[in-house]
Amino acid sequence: MSKFFEALERAEQEQALKTPSPSPRLAADTSGSPSPAVPSPMVEPIAAPRRGRPVVEAPATGSASDGSSRGEENLVSLFDPASWEAEQYRVLRHVVETLRKGVNLQIVAVTSAGVGDGKTTTAINLAGALAQSADARVLLVDVDLRRPAVARHLGLGGSKRSLVEALLDSRLTLEATVERLAQCNLSVLTAGRPTVAPYELLKSPRLEALFEEMRQHYDYVVLDTPPFLPVPDCRLIEKCVDGFILIVAAHRTPRGTVGETLNLMDPAKVVGVVFNGDDARRPNYYDVYARPSAARWRRAWSKP
Image (cartoon, rainbow, N blue to C red; front, side):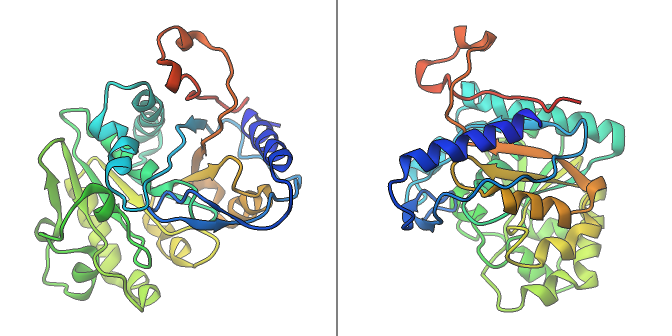
């Protein structure tokens, strides 16, 4: 069993000890609003990821209910790139850069098994970390047409057109819809207004054409996608992406749902897993340099 599944099992056991009854409670939702958390799940054996796939442990990513000041604190790659937490996203950046050279990983989708595991925060921080390279052309795209969150997290007021508008109007070019962030080397394509027909939009040939245009203009395209299990959206766009990064939240994501998600994904497109919010501390070399409040953020790799 990999370090990832050992840590996930430990987190679930710790959560079970902390929960006096199986009644639901409110937990932090990384999309910016509180959502009900399910009772501590039963531990079920599931298949491990493919041998050699990286497992990165990321900072815990809670957010304020209004998505404002706490949101900036979580977007460390953009607002605090010299921090210890930002270094953990550079670990993920290194994985993506290595795979870009090896297997042409250009369009990477960030998803999760369910809601509230930290996929949006991870997608923004990964894109921000990649954009720290001055010569890299990086695009962040919000493909969650049901619950778009990227624009809110980044404080974008809709001055540019959106992905939904580009899908509905074939005359709109990618350049006309993308917004460049002034403070960093990052371009953003927001989802736009929630739509009642996301399935039809995501299966349209227009989306494939937009992805091909993105490949022509950007070195890296990071997609914030809907959760994999509740809706079919990720399965619709799977043919257009080069790989998926799966976000798993400690104390929150049931192991059974992780296994179900991995079984539904094309194994060749599973880039790796980000284990989000595991607060069990393990001593390591970098503790010497880390701030006390940030010493719990670390990384681990699955054993080959």
